[in-house]
Amino acid sequence: MVKLLTVVLAVAAVGWRTRRWRYVWVPIAIAIGVAGALAARTYVDSEGLASDPAPPQLWLWTGCFVAAVAVAILGWRGTRWWRRALSILLVPLSFAAALVVLNEWVGYYPTVSAAWGALTAGPLPDEIDVAELAGLRGTSPDTGKVVQVDIPDDASGFAHRSEYVYLPPAWFAGATPPALPALMMIAGEFNTPADWLRSGGAIETVDDYAASHDGQAPILVFVDSGGSFNNDTECVDGPRGNAADHLTDDVRPYLVSTFGASAKPENWGVVGWSMGGTCAVDLTVMHPDLFTTFEDIAGDAGPTAGTKEQTIDRLFDGDASQWDAYDPATVMAKHGPYVGVSGWFEDTGAPPNGGKRPQSGNYHPPPRATSTPSGYGGHDDTHDTGELGAADTLCKEASAQQISCEVHTIWSGHTWQFATQAFTDALPWLADHIRTDS
Image (cartoon, rainbow, N blue to C red; front, top):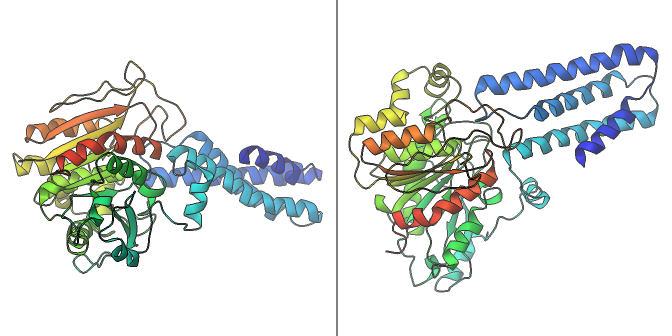
């Protein structure tokens, strides 16, 4: 509807006008729009900002937005007031159309209400004020509760945004909090700590699990791995900030000291989507003394910010040894056999039956996709080379080092809807491996 309205308004705003307008200024506005679209695409590609290529529609509507700005400026003089008004209105409307296509690609907001809640910073599912927790002690709430927290960065010095903690119904039973297991939840690039709650459906998933397990579920902490929306740290320490130290040395101890989470590594897991999936593997294989379970949802083979050379330059300030220190395959080979570490990989694909085929055991490679929905959900016919085959490769290398792992596939695009389903699939497995009921 937004796109159709934009087209109608564009026709009215541009109009027929004068001969000079039709043959000089309109072509110039179109050329400016094309240049803007190409510049945006070049920037996204050069910075390695997307796991899969964007659909052509995104660049088309980006160009329309830039062209709309040009039309408003170039056609301002000598134009009737109502056409000026339409030209001004066309700018935000064409921008909204581009955002709609962007949302179709990444699946950030499944509903208008979800998008409005994010825009207006509305309450999150199950959210209460941290001051209300004390009054719920000794009760049995029907659902868990989410609180916003400001975790000190004393250990890392990493400037981060507010983060969120989900406390299951079992946390409120008794005079003191039980030492529950915990899952660290990491989103993808261009993230906010609330993404898993607003777009990923994590609260509904874990509440459903708790309801079917007498209120027992892990504590979930929704972390800030970037510090800002467009800071892709890949969860490493480097010129973009000490993101790894924040997660291991700030967040984990805070959950233990503030909410009584278990300090045992066998009770901790990491769940990550897209870039966060890479983080989940990395954090676990680098710190098996802190985490012993992970779910990697469509992550890359390792921290990625462009080509390998660009990654070393952008993430590690040109230090190749630091790339080795954060490359999961290198880390696993150097560490040697692991004890008690398990991983679940979930990726997009299209099994022959056209549906989902979970698999179990130490290593079971899935059939690779031959076709998937095109131009939607961040997928066309070309995958980012860092993601392509990463789950299969990493699971093989993990198995060689005694890490028990599984590879699962869903026929889907690289969207938040896929991440939601992947977390729903894996939660019973995750809860079991971090000993939720023990």
